[in-house]
Amino acid sequence: MFFEKYRKKEDGTIRFYDLNSTRTKILCIIIFILCIGIIIVALFPPVWVFLASFKDIKEFRRNPTILPQKFDLQVFIKTWNDLKFVKYYVNSFISVLGSVISAVIFNGLLAYGLAILKPKGHKIVYGLVMWSLLIPATTSIVALFVNINKIGLNQSFIPLWLALGANAFYVVLFKQFFEGLPREIVEAAKLDGCGYLQTFLRIILPLSKSIVMVVVIFAINAAWSDFLLPYLLLNGSGKETVMVRLFMFRTSNATDVEVLRAVAFSIVPPIILFTVFQKQITAGAAAGALKG
Image 1: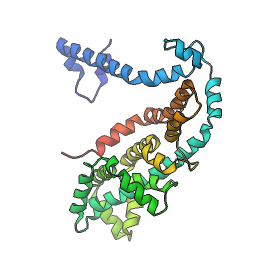
Image 2 (image 1 turned 120 degrees about the vertical axis):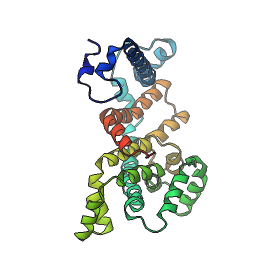
Image 3 (image 1 turned 90 degrees about the horizontal axis):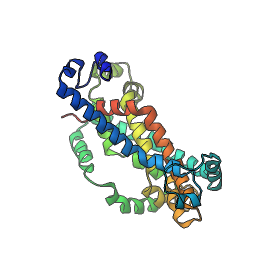
Image 4 (image 1 turned 45 degrees about the horizontal axis):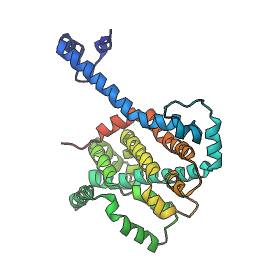
């Protein structure tokens, strides 16, 4: 009964006829056990944070068990109101929204030029894009921060938006996907009088919904989880994001349990995002993966 679902399986490495071998059955069971173990290890930290958040400070320090004595959602509501988390959620959503738009438009436009238009010198530009992947982002944070201050964009969301609008990884994903699109459609758009920008907005992007969805999800997760640049630019401006607010707890009067509840608030959106769109993430990433 355990292997009956393989009768209708049409993809993957293991097919139903492979299970005639006892060795394959044992290997399949071992793989399942390993996967269950990985799931448990991956889920334990957020589950522990969530359950520990129901405890008060005395129970948290004295009771070593993972389960709280009682489940009372009012403690979460109280912490949410006391720490004024609505403000930081709104700031984070503003940062995420602008970052997503910039990630799709600017990286998509560059990839469109490299994959479709291919102007003179496009190989050099693409080489620089690939070379930039080798440079850790933190090595340029000082120069970036100094230049942002010089042009007067500090304490603003704009640098956070543009940071994801110049992401080499997204450019590579877009470029590889655009190169697989039918060239006849682009040529037909030219014959109909579409300009380069119109072709990108009306033809290329609608045909690239899968890879756009992948970039959107990656950009949301990156913008929501980013700490260093928002902390440098927004600290003290009243526009702090959720991650910056979490760091500020070290100098606040919040208890350990309140900090755990704040952490729980911060990890809920990425968990929901991945749970809802996990198929799009894996399918789209495979469609836009680097070609060998």
